[in-house]
Length: 496
Ligand code: ADP
Image (cartoon, rainbow, N blue to C red; front, side, top):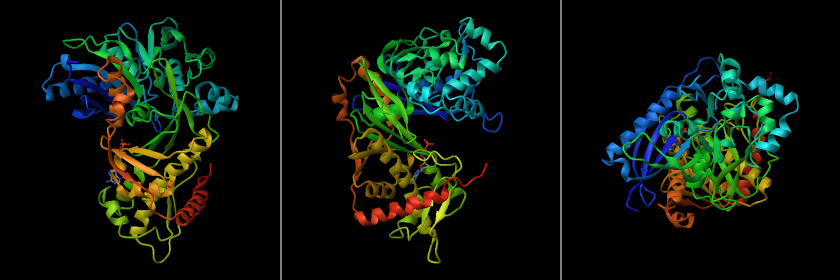
């Protein structure tokens, strides 16, 4: 193949990025641009969809210029994106009719409570694999149709398009020729039936969404069409939501394989193969990807406060000057000295799902120092991740044998060592930590034959460092006992 690169478009919540990858799966060049976060009211979060596009196209142009290449050198484009964020635009003019409503936006939480009371929880879980929540696109889309003047009439007349961010970007890249999404993004809308792989008529009726405004759902790796805005056409050939792309970029391609991203929060996904596994432990069932007609499902769980606990120690408690500084401080003590920190600063995610939990610092004595608290903070992240993987194991009946990691806080050797001790298995940190963008690049590259097969790219996943358990089992058992006791103290703290 004469072309040298795959271009990955990584449209995130706070910035748009464009990354060039070469045949070896190495990141060659990157460009990044932040964009405005709009908070019109408490609990509301919006983005200007036109700014999402302009920031994205400007980094694409910049990354090609930096590498001094033209579009002919790009074999394909892969797209990964912030999930669930909802864009509605006019089919004829391509003008958005309202700002994009971001996944974090809570404006439809009350409406979701009403639906729960009306008994819709089980149907939604059965069809979509999701918990009934404002997080997903369905209620955001309904809100736009109900609140933007004239929107509903236009939608019913087939004059509006709905898309998650992937759909919006592809529409712009092809000047409206392609109106598509992929199964992984569709599975986050709460409108998509993850079993028969169709937009669900009953849910469309429930949310009052005209089917005419929905994009066609494609596989995650296929040539969808070509761009029409550059000097030469580039095939668009891969799409996946950010966390699913990361699971693929970590090459967690076999059932039972798990990845965790230690970012501000932590995002865990377990590949469950061709089975959609239902959770008894507040995890989500979602589609990982569909390739060559085969759908791969995943279980997903998230920790709300992961690396953010370290940020709190830095900015709130002012115990460290920088995030990496926590490691030096925590390393000055051998253990937590009996101190446990439950970083439920914004409630607890899976498996507890308790919005009323708050942070708890337990076991403080006269001998406690800032170093013990630093260590307890790192442990608090690792314990939360432990609890989610255990929930995944219980739901999937698969035993994990390793965890693949990425994200900013995965830079902490101490955190990963503690994590390995808790699990009693190895933690693997790959050389390329840009797994999200890499996953999208792989999906696109596979579709155009830039890479031959998944087996072909498997060997590119190279370990930077692995962590093996060294702690004794009794000690770990004791720590887990006190951790779970501390969690109980943190739960249901706030009273309505
Ligand atoms: P996001 O993509 O969610 O914004 P990142 O993946 O960039 O987050 O990760 C940022 C988090 O990583 C921050 O919360 C920060 O506290 C933490 N972090 C960064 N470097 C280190 C380090 N060396 N040790 C521990 N934590 C770190």
